[in-house]
Structure formats: C-alpha cells, structure tokens
Length: 319
Ligand SMILES: NC(=O)c1ccc[n+]([C@@H]2O[C@H](COP(=O)([O-])OP(=O)(O)OC[C@H]3O[C@@H](n4cnc5c(N)ncnc54)[C@H](O)[C@@H]3O)[C@@H](O)[C@H]2O)c1
Image 1 (spheres, rainbow, N blue to C red):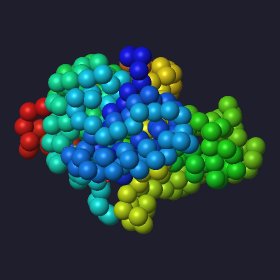
Image 2 (cartoon, rainbow, N blue to C red):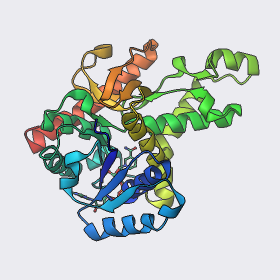
Image 3 (cartoon, rainbow, N blue to C red):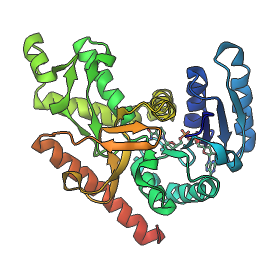
C-alpha cells in the first residue's frame, strides 16, 4: 500500500460521482481522480465538488485518465450501463462484461498493485471476469457485493424493532440481486441473538415475515429506480465504507463479493459472504455456521451466477 491515499474512480456517472463526493467529505483520501469516457462530465463533476473544498478536509480531487492508476492505492469501477426500470442486474451482463474487460486492460497495464473494487452490475459476474481476465490474486479484486443489501436489511430490522441500525448485526449474502439470501440465524441485536431478542420483546419473526423482509431488501433497488431512475446515495456510502476498510487497513468484516472455491460446496464463482477486508483487499472469508436453509439458498444463488458465467463464456468467448 502506498503512503499517499489515492483513489481512482472509473465512471463519473451517478454512482461514481456521489462516491467521490462521499469520499471527499470523509477525509479518507489524499487524492481522488474521476475517469470517464465523457471527459467533460468528469471535469464538470470535479469542478462542482472542488467548489465545496472550503468545507471539507483537504483533498486533491480532479478529472484524469488511466495513467492516474499507476500510483493509485484503490481503483473503483462504476462505469457501464445501468438498470432501466423493470430490468434485472443480470440483464446488463453482456455490455458490461465487455466494458469491464476493456477497463481492466487499461488499469492493469498501469498497476498490478492497486486494490480494485467493482461496483458495475451485475457486480458478482463482473468481479469474476475481472479476476479471470487480469490474473491478479483473488483477494485483490473485490465486488461491492451485498454491503448495500446488508445495510438495507439492517435498516428494515431497525425500523421493526426501534433500534439504531448500527447496533444490528445482520448479513445478506450470495448474489447482489434476486437470489440473495438473508442470514437470519446469525442476526444479532446488541450482541443478543435476534431470536432471543424477539422472545423477550414479543415481536417474533415468522417464516412469512422473514420472506417479506427479504423481498423488501431484494426489491429496494427496483422501487428506487422506478421512482428516480437510479440508486446512488446509500450505494456511495457503502462504497466509502469498503474503500475506507482498504485505505485504513481496517480488517473490517464486510459482505463483499469475492472468489469462492470450495466453501459450502460452492466452486469457482464470485459472491458475497462476510469477509475480512484490509489493505490487500479480501484477507479471509469467515467460515460462518449457517443453517441448512441458508446453505441451500446460498448454493442456489451460486448456481444462478454460474449459469450466467457459463452463458457469457459460451456467447462472448474467452475469459
Ligand atoms: N453494486 C452496486 O451496489 C451498485 C449500486 C448502484 C449502481 N450500480 C451499477 O453501477 C453502474 C453505474 O451506475 P450509474 O447509475 O452511475 O450509471 P450512469 O449511467 O449514471 O454512469 C455510468 C458512467 O459510466 C461511463 N462509462 C460508460 N462506459 C465507459 C467506459 N468504457 N469507460 C469509462 N467510462 C464509461 C458513462 O459515461 C457514465 O458517466 C451500473 O452498472 C449500475 O447498475 C451498482
């Protein structure tokens, strides 16, 4: 990890620029660079943010190009097509795999040291191809995965129980998408297992409640996209959290998307599980003890992703 904390964000659209804004406010980075096919847009976003520099910790924020990756600590990829109302994340796959491979070539010809964070959807499939295409070590490329979905889950539980979301530990794992899985067996409120907490407060969560809450988490993005065409505020905060874990070498447990090869009988697919994130990217994956239903759901989710990976291989060729 370099001493200067430089973050390059490829894609200065809604997610890329709000992420730059969140990072700028956080004081986590010394330098933030926006790279986009539309250079004018990247310059405009940088200029707009720079006019607020008086109010935030010092940071060198500017538009740039791929040469900026050479000394970056972190490269974030948010470039590509986004979901239209009613479209699933997986439907973006062909265009975005092609875009992501081109960007990976540009980035890895300048640096083989930076941690690369993929945000573009479908994030698990793109993380997989970015990894295969680049040949970088598995932990060095990670997807933003279900960090956001886990935050949505905690938000919904916090509303149900009237508890600060920061005191709720609950994870969504698997695909960042329609097959994702809620880990109810591991959910805790202030260190108390959710099940015990519910017995005391009287607000039990039935199987039907569990299904309804998970459906709400899964459908959150669809509702926001129907209302305002894109999601980006919570997304950019999730990204700031992940970038912070890398820049500060935090060893934070986050549900990022990473290569799974053998765990829970799942092979050769990228998906989210609670993982330890630090300056090298993903250090380890937690071997969490899931119940039978959760393992089954996770395997089903891995199956959905593997099918898409094989489809892309068959239709678009090579890694
Ligand atoms: N993983 C997550 O949690 C999450 C959350 C929200 C959005 N997303 C995904 O992030 C992506 C971006 O979403 P958005 O709302 O910012 O879209 P957007 O359309 O606002 O921005 C995309 C940007 O990418 C740029 N771009 C396209 N191709 C490029 C290339 N080859 N090189 C450089 N720049 C290029 C475009 O010019 C545009 O500025 C989408 O795929 C979306 O689905 C992921």
